[in-house]
Length: 145
Image (cartoon, rainbow, N blue to C red; front, side, top):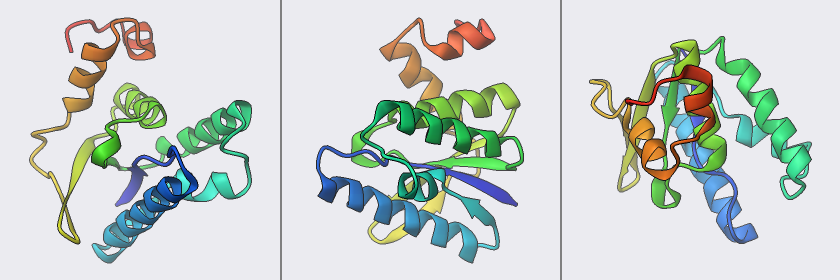
């Protein structure tokens, strides 16, 4: 299976950003060791683009989103930062494409994936609570998520 990994990247400090990148590397490792091909765009594009320049950050997010259409699932891990704006874009596109989403949780040093779909639409509820005029609503017209 081809898994698109969505997790926070941007942090308030360089140390937070590195901690987020480390978590993303661990998520990729977890997916690959489960036999999947994993793609985490936030581990690739910030090495070539400047995350602190909004136009470059947006270009990196758009480039990463172009790979989502060939992924079998999107796994999302929100950690203490919640669902970030970049993750929200990834989840919105996954929903539009019909790509199944799975929540990934961490217990100690171990990750586990919600395979039952219990949290598949949690992000929609969070988005709805935060903003009724989200891009999701514009693209899908769904206001009852």
